[in-house]
Length: 262
Image (cartoon, rainbow, N blue to C red; front, side):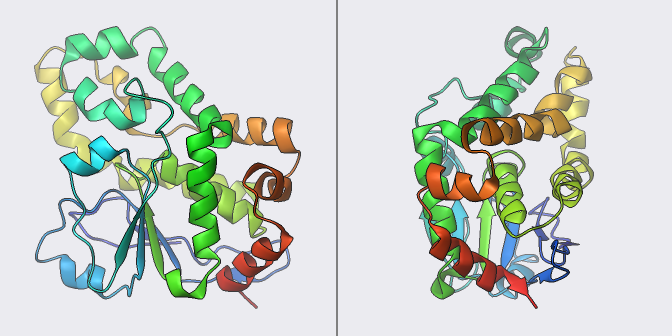
């Protein structure tokens, strides 16, 4: 795993480098994850262009894409995959920035443990909701093709929809669950500092910063929910890909060939 220090694209990293159970390594320079690309600066764009990205998989809602369109790296094409299409406007991952702008709204929507409940519900949906299933099917099927990599996968903050995509892929590749959680939790280190001003404004307006922490960061229990639902429904990550996403053993083999270095 290599963080890429673009200040205008926080939480950007190459997920390559993790060891698999067989002792091989996940290839570097193939799969990147990040926040959205709506605020890429002129200074950072050459660095982004230099990654050689061919495909940007955008997991945001249509409203999110319209409100903050990506600035694509040179030579890349965009693939829009609305993971939360079936969830609607009540989805906290899609609406979080509007909710946290007002402490009164935040208290109403997120107080009393409701934020954690929202996210746990979303992480269940990532595994079984039809729009999520179709989105992740297209994502992983695309990654199995030589023509689509190197690829960058993102949502708004690159932590939830992107977090599950990355976790599921790494597990399929044979990366240990310990390393999968390590990669997932790196968001707290790489993303939260970029929200320092948000926390400050929220506190100045009378808000409780504890309300924001489960929204702007990630928690082990969120990913644990997805993994529990996956195992309950399908037993293994391989069966999640085959029976849940409709990606058979042949596609899974191609993914491993694209993503694993001997």
